[in-house]
Amino acid sequence: MTENLVSAARLAAAIFESGLKSPAEWEARFPVRGLPEGAMVTRFAPSPTGFLTLGNLLTAFVDRLLANTSGGVFFLRLEDTDKKRETGDGVSGIVNDMAAFGLAIDEGVTGFGTERGAYGPYTQSHRREIYHTYAKALVEQGLAYPCFCSADDLDKLRNEQEQAGVNKGYYGQWTKCRNLSLDEQLAHLKSGEPYTLRLRSPGDASRKIFVNDLVRGKLELPEYDMDVVLLKADGIPTYHFAHAVDDHLMRVTHVIRGDEWLASLPLHAQLFYLLGFKPPKYAHIAPMMKLDAETGGKRKLSKRKDPEAAVGALVRAGYPNAALHEYLVTLLNSSFEDWRRANPDAPLAKFPFSLKKMQPSGALFDLQKLEDVSKTVISRMTAEQVYAQALAWANAFDPDLASLLSNDPAYSIAMLSIDRGNKKPRKDIARWGQLRELYSYFYDELFEPRLVSAPEILQAYLEVYDPNDDKDAWFAKIKSICEPLGYCPDVKTYKADPDTWKGHVSDVSGAIRMAVTGRENTPDLWAVMRVIGEARVRGRMEEAM
Ligand code: GLU
Image (cartoon, rainbow, N blue to C red; front, side, top):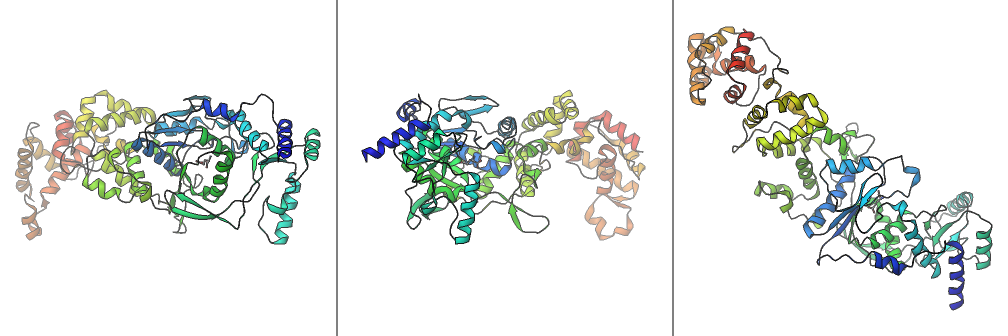
């Protein structure tokens, strides 16, 4: 045994650079966080792919919710160990998407090459030394070894395994480099051959392990028996190894991640065990789904096929963050909608979100549902809130609209106040990008005049129009011009004997509406006319004749 350890120490010394810190030094540098009992530490750990889909963001959103509800910490870590997948600055897009989505981090990566927090570096490619410390410790304990198999060797191995009809991978009898003698290992190393560092797995696939997943409950899985690569030939760790080291040293308590990692859980359990780390709790979330327009079946939401589900696209379309957040919670916990009905005014943070209530199957992304949720959320905002958010959006994405809105803020706010603040507010806006179209007629620059086929209605109305009329007086006047023009002032009476009339009161108000707004449908016309003002009302009516 001692002899083995001496060999292992010699091997470790031959592999690793000298002067590496010890595990104890890293432990001391990143102490257990002084957080209250029950506080959850969560992280979002994307690779730098440049942008996020709503599906990626769902896990980050859960991370944020858990940290919020428990008084914990949420941070952003960049997993850039797969150089093949990297494309220049793949970071800023992610950071910007998170910020635009209103997902604040407590620590971690804040931009391309910037970060804050005491548990960094938060970019994996800057943590090489740390990984090497722990890899070295494994080698010293005989738990990891260098593997000199080339890509060709591994191809050959796969072919042989295929022919033999057994599981593919580096395990059991197939681990050519596992049993090299120290002298052989040193000779290979000396010759400068490329090598990876593999785990010497003590696992046995015929045994079971039990792991608890916070969404799926208790799972029984086979023990992991592969000698996986811990460090690649360039000394960069694989995801598995980096996950264990990072989540341990960053003192993560809860790992929320895509369920594509579920199969790796036995490996991760083993790595945490061999490294002497307490494992975090896991929640594996199914990917977001979508109904495929062509096949009608469900499929995974895709970055490529579903550009509308990219966070940037949703933000550009102008869905307010509050609506996006509310929508995600409806996807996460089906009890949310009942809670919302019972607590229409409560802040979202008051909802008792629970991982246990999550569906293990993937939530369905449904743009229509998002629109509905968003309309409701916006309908409950004050006109001032709508104004501020719409203006912020327009400043970024529609500068002309921004200048119209901000030319006369009081006018714009009066416009946005129509049918708002009452029991049944109007649900017309789903996203700020619709404002230009929905409210165009309030601005002369956007108003599109339409001719009205019954100019005599406008003529008659102009004679009685008084901008100071309250709503009852306003309506009484519209009724008053009906009969002389051959329109029935009362819809019921009209319906009883339609042939006697040219039409009824709605046709009369409809003609006025068309002249003043160019539209068949608008919010409360009396209110619209009050906001638009006498000069515009008269001017537009005259033009429409
Ligand atoms: N970098 C991994 C991914 O993007 C992170 C998985 C995890 O959260 O642990 O899938």
